[in-house]
Structure formats: C-alpha cells, structure tokens
Image (cartoon, rainbow, N blue to C red):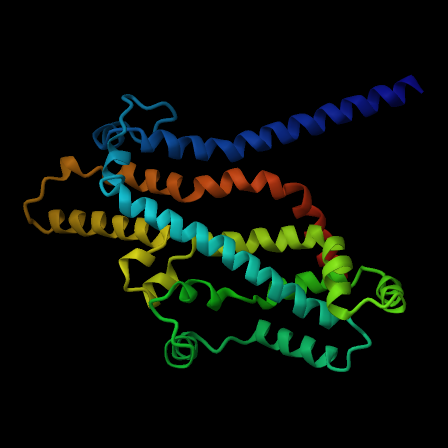
Length: 295
C-alpha cells in the first residue's frame, strides 16, 4: 500500500515537473520579445537577441506612441468591435446550432447540410466584397468590421456538437410546462451551454481582435481604423523607410527603432488577449473536447 502511494506521488511530481518545463518553454519566447522591445537597435545588431537587454530603452514605445490619440482611438474601435462582434456572433452561432440539433424541426438536416457545405467551399473575396459594398452598403462603417465574421461554419459545427449532448427530455419537459421556444433556448439551453459559449466566444474574440484585413478592404475613415491595422501601417512605414535607405536614399534611421518597434507592436497587439485568456481556460478544454466528440 505504501509503495503504491509512494509511486503515485513520484508520478505526480514528474507530471508537475513536465508542465513546469513546458510552461517555461512557452514563456521563454515571450520574454525574448519583451527584451528586444526594450533594447537599442544598435545593440540588437551587434549582440543579437538577448534575454536581458544590454541597455534598457523605451525608444520603440516612444516611436509607436508618437500619435497617442490615434492609438487610443484604434484601441477603442478594436474593443468595441471585439465585444459587439463576439456577442452578435455568439447569438447567431448558438441559434443556428440549436435548430440543427432539434430532431423535431423539419429543416434541421437541410440547415446542417447548408452549414457543412459552406465549411467545405468558399466563394472567395470578390463575392464577399460585392455583397459588403453593393448589397449591404456597409463599407466605411463600423459594421464592415463586424458582419463579415458574424457566423463561422466551423464554430457552428462545434457548438452543435456540444448541444447534441444536452438531453432532449429537458426541452420536452419545458414544452409541457408551457415554455415557448425562445424561452427554452434562452433560459435552459444557453445556461447549459456555457462551456461551449465561452470556447467559441474566445475564438471569435481572437478573430475580431487580430483582424486588420477587413479594415484594409473597407475602411477609409481614420476614426474607424482598428488597432491591428493601425500597428500594421506603422510597421509598413518602417519597412518602406528601410528599403529606401538600402536603395541609397539618405534617411536618418537612428531615430527609427525598426527591430525593437516590431516587438513593441507585438506586445501591444497581443497583450490584452493574453490577460483575457486565463479567464476562459477552464471552459475552453471542456467545450473543445465535448464538441469534438459529439460533433
């Protein structure tokens, strides 16, 4: 008995040690990114990437924050798009997934086939652009950053896989008690689907937060520029100046921290979502595993 307990304890320590090492391996590159963002470009060119900077400087962040008002405004646009877009996408995705799981709904199979078909085949950029600009007329509005990502076929199938595991008897009982379809969905199905909602919601939030493609296609108004596109334009300007310098045009690059700015942009872009991820972690694993098995 004691030997089995001792062996189990040793196994637990091995598992803990394994995950500690794995965590260090994940954190190590992030520390490098932070270190490079706080380094002089001259030190980077001379010594390479260092885990501890030779000299600490905030020149890269000063360069990025040269227009603080525009940066703050892009943050506000991205936060609004992420919050509203994620909420709208969850409402649409969960609604479609719910009717796909209802065996008593006449068109559930047709709806499932339609969603699965769009998962396999994509019309491409041109039809999407025509619909956004010529049909919906939402170009250069905040909705151009939200509606194109409104429903994902893959996330809908993932949500359906989770909802398939909910007992149908609960819905039948609600019907007997006189509950309407909307009331059953809102008061019973959605609360039971919290792990799936948190998982899919995190994926939608990441998609909205990291997007710059829609802004490049549809947005001309400077007040609607999201964070990722704003930072991407800063990076494009740095690359443009670097190429001109290599072409022989006289440009003072000492005031432009190219390499450290790249890492600073990465920190500003990824930082908020890195802090948000741990709050969804306990739901993420359950939502993925149940959805994958049932789907």
